[in-house]
Length: 463
Image 1 (tube, one colour):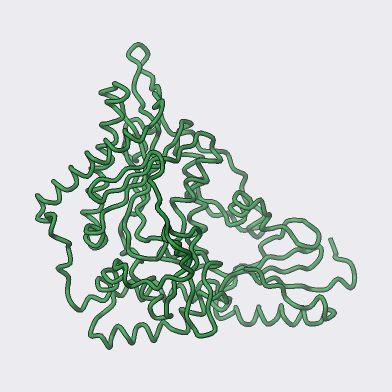
Image 2 (image 1 turned 60 degrees about the horizontal axis):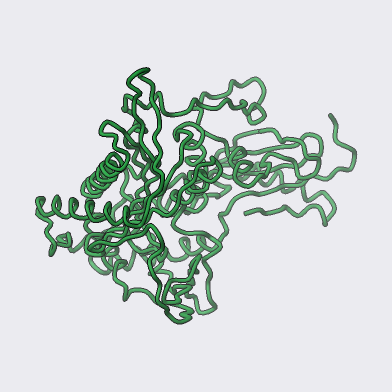
């Protein structure tokens, strides 16, 4: 179909390469690296690589997808992402939405799900951040303690539970804080003797006394195991090389005196919420549960959230960075102040090492569980996104749980990412543009848009 005569060419540039976080990294990364070197320390190469990759996230010069509506000649440029997992709000937000959708559609059985959050004592956080094997073992002991309590409560010695745990390495103040968010099936599966079928036995309720019992037993088992490994109550695991800048930044981020608290409104006494208990610094909370799929997906997005949201970062006139909290702390602290170099040090301290798993599948949801095939729901039927591929080119094979960015936009925000803003029809993929052709194609689109009337020629920028 030919577009009407006189219809102007418009260009939409999607991406977030010009937001404040990108500008801070671009302007102060070299200063941060120079300070680390001046202190006689060295930063692991994968930390610097994470920053360098983030710098080109959303940069049109690094390549983009070119979408086009043939009816009204609207062009949309979607830049490539960095695909990092350290702190990028865009890439980690996409991974958050995709993983949550995958768990709800094809992993979690149609049973109630409860979130169990275990926070470690201050004296153990540096140790767990530096030794991932100890962090994983502590998680295994906690989950085993939880399953024992569930089998005892339901009187099902042969019952089996399941969970998906996200190990987070950050707190709301961007401090190094390894802790566990476990989405646990709120009950146990057991076989019926007569038929051999699996039946789910839900927990009727979880009380504060139950949480106290679980955290008491888990803390005791974890501390005994650490003592046998040579990490007694007085050991803090800080026997690190003096020139390791990453270890030094993690240790400093754990200090409460390293924070400049902003807008302190006055403290107040805060009692523990229901289904929450503390034992020797181990804090366990089990107050969130859900049964409908929409609520479970929201809960999954929460445990997979990025450490930083772009809209909570501001820069003052004096150059200091203000990071606002979503909710004020008990003492009234609502924001924190950082110099740009201090802020980059905080970010580098929470970047997880490569080749470690931060998402752990356990019990009947584990990949090698003999009961997994009988527990997980069948994969949903999804339409092939044929409008994303050029005609004559076969569509690439992909796993069923991999969602396109347009599918995720609609699922999370009910927004049609491929909808033409002028006529409402779906746009088609015209080309995947890679360097060095990016500049030539981008400039050509800008020249075509410049021939339109001034009020319509300006390219729209969307974050």
